[in-house]
Length: 261
Image (cartoon, rainbow, N blue to C red; front, side, top):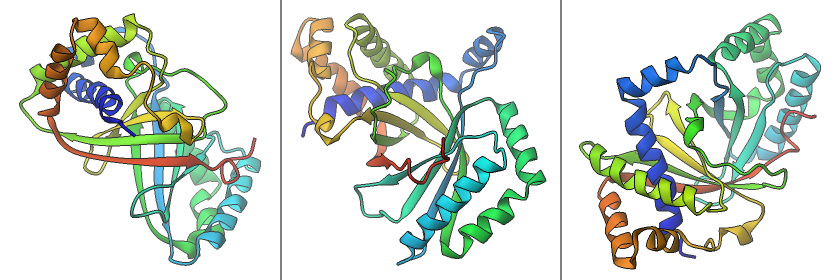
């Protein structure tokens, strides 16, 4: 499977956003819009104790049902990695919120002792946990809605400093080409608040077959936009120099563990 150019597109979006979000001009533009975006996510990453995954999942189902019945204002979706060297953790995420929603959730959780219920239902099976917020710059995402998405490829990036101008030049050309040619593949992105930071790029898939090369490929899209394959390769090479570190995994959505409808 050749994922180089599809991954580069997603990394380009991430890097542009990392640069833009650090810009005072970008921040001012966001405030001038005069509206509150529902682009904040609360994300928990929890590792089950060795050999206790089944018991952990049963406790998680019980806890999800309790949160639903107790009127939790958040809907929680749970995902599990299917590739990689560490498969013993669960990603628990609630998205499409405002920062103010985080206050409302905190008030509900405090009033209803949600933490106490969680540890009674699941705590004895928990080895380790982390909590982050995620922020999605919605004006740059390209998401085609579907109820059939089951798998999510997630690329996490760290970028070198001093490459901002190059990244902006490359991303502008790629974004213009993808938009103009209406590339029919979804992607979203999320930068992490807490921990080491960085940016994650999410590509949804209905099945494993959709991990195959897209058609047209990003190389074909850029070749058409720039007039030659050589020009497209030069553009990608320019971007590659900006990448410091990359990690990729695939998650499967677990509706059986998520907040019941």
